[in-house]
Amino acid sequence: MNYLLIIKFIGSLLQFEGLFMILPFTVGLYYHEQQSKYLLLSAAVAFTIGSLLRLIKPKNTKFHPKEGFVATAFSWFVMSVMGAMPFWLSGEIPSFTNAVFETASGFTTTGASILVDIEAMCRCMLFWRSFTHWIGGMGVLVFMLIFLKSSADEMNLMKAESPGPSVDKLVPRVRTTAFILYALYTGITVVSIVSFILAGMPIFDSVCIGFGAAGTGGFGVKADSCASYSPLCQVLITISMFLFGVNFKVYFLIVFKKFKEILKCEEVLWYTIIYVAASLLVAINIVSDLGTVGESVRASCFQVASIMTTTGYATHDFNTWTTLPKAILVLIMFTGACAGSTGGGIKVSRWILYLKQIKREVAKYTHPRSVKKIRLDGDVVDEDTIRGANVYLMAYAAVFIVSMLIICIDGYDLITCFTSVAATLNNIGPGLEVVGPIGNYDGYSLLSKWVFVFDMIAGRLEIFPVLIMLAPQTWKKK
Image (cartoon, rainbow, N blue to C red; front, side):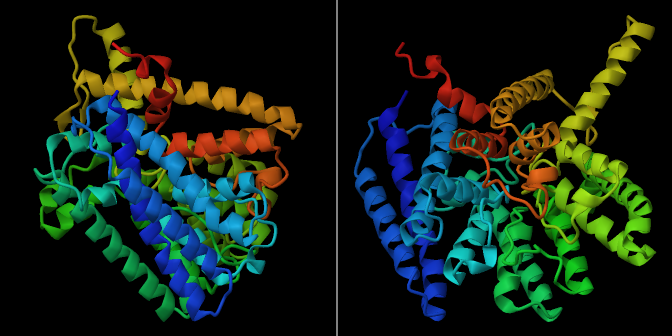
């Protein structure tokens, strides 16, 4: 294990995080808020520590897969702790554990909150809270790769942080791939924010909601999430959430006019089909609750997009809906968005692979001598990718079960415990019952909150970087 290389990389991360805090600090200056000084102080501390760590000169500067996974996992924990400092030092979130929970929820784009009165928080801290969504959406390490020297081993960092069963470079150079991803990400974010402003949403709200929709995070600036915004704004937020749940490779193909390749994107097709089917089923079943077809369709499309893309915004308290629509929402918690998007969950592409494996196994029983290859987007999927998807599901189930058993110690009902773990591990935010769209996670014990922090980071990094970091054999000397 190349400890010095990992420590130096953490230094680079802290430098970037310190620079990121300058933007919410300027927001605090604009609104004349005293709490902004804690953002500046935290930024200075982060940048100074990062600069000192950057002085380390490891003999070997190559990231092997093991170092890439460990550096990525450790970075996200460090980033969450340092990012919590402004909340904690300013007293906006007096509990250190709660501050780390809120920050980890932000960076992992989960949107789960311990805040009881969101609107009481000062604007610079609300901005920092939402900005963490945007930073974590595409991945802070992917952003850092834009400014690092491009080499083949840096792909190990991108693979460790980027969601999906496999990660491909859009172009030969890692640095160029990272730049293209962030250019697309920034461009669509700006378009979303401008559309919200033109629809009549206040500028501050538009930026914060835009960050949340882009990162598929879910932190709002109002106690009712998005319920008080106009129907037009809600429709635009729905569209934005859906678009950020699409694999960014599709936008790359659109920009470079490779339309024939877009038609091969099987995952996006099924993502759209699942979204439309779930929206229709939910809309049909909530008409009696909401009164009109138009209102039920708008609410359904919004909530299905929010949960499926793991954003977590809400326009209605779906906790009060009947059993079937709630069951559909819980099921699509596990479906997730597309691989290569900012959304969480298990991912549509993995479910496609699981279903095709079932089909292949059935075919083997009926035709034992047949040899069938699994294809995705017209290409044969190699057995390593299939094995990785299968092992991921087993690891996911193990983390889910252990987390839920620990959470149950707090004594909440089974639905609350189950959906709270599902909502944090899948980076969604709201669950049902106590942790529903109008509830929060404040009542949980300190132990449970740290379990949730672990789940949020593990879910964002898709389990294995965190498990590799914790594995004893990772740290053994050969």
